[in-house]
Image (cartoon, rainbow, N blue to C red; front, side, top):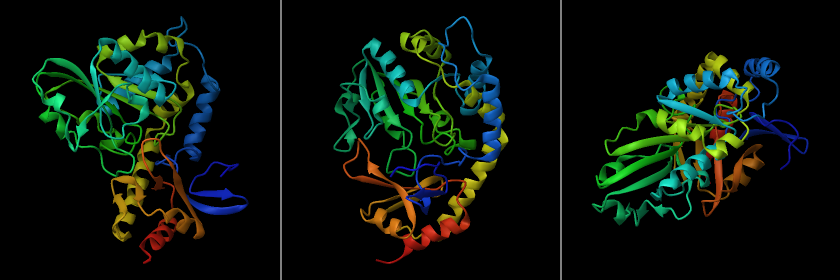
Length: 342
């Protein structure tokens, strides 16, 4: 479907208006009047884009300002911004590969943090045997904080069962958890505390709940400083400075939208019949349905959801996304259809 206007809580397709429960703008900020106003003022100050290297002789102050502010929010020692979440992932993986560690990946890890030759973390639902061996070696484990088709964050309890001989670096993709999970939307990075993890690194797109253009990397200061001198970082354009300033100035708006989203999720939790084939958690703004016919069923009732083939999944993904902008009437209509008996 090709549309000519931004899809918020409604979408117009071929002249017909539908309710829209799709996308990734969980906090509903992309067309929020006050947020757009702040962003517009930021564009007037910083321009539409600044395509220079961060290591150029001319440096914009907003980068240091945002990175310091964001690091405090998520509980990281230091933060680095880049132009996209995918670049954030590849920059980190390519840097870590230089020390020749053994890479392991959690099932269905996002391609941006999937290294060539990476080994599966689990085999037949058990930790890879190599992780249990008392052999001194560096390993990197990559994992999405919350997996596609799941409605709760990954449990990191498996870390406690890995041999203490391993020097573990944990890389977490928080693209779908920032702004949604954790205290004040800080994600899960700051809450992961396992004694056998020597280093943890967070990568994320800023373009989901936060509705910003760019990506972010978080970790210890030594690691972030090394990335600043990587050729890929030096030679690439920086994140859009106007979006970074808008974020720094919109704290109250973010807080208000998080509360609105929480209210919507509590409303659904009270009324949705979570039956076989439906996944929902009131702390996460997505309903997953395993019913292959749910897309057409909702479409005929005037509702469009996200439906496509994701690279790491076998079947079509039916993703019903709740945002802060949906009204109570929108939610009632969705719930009525999902609760309807076959």
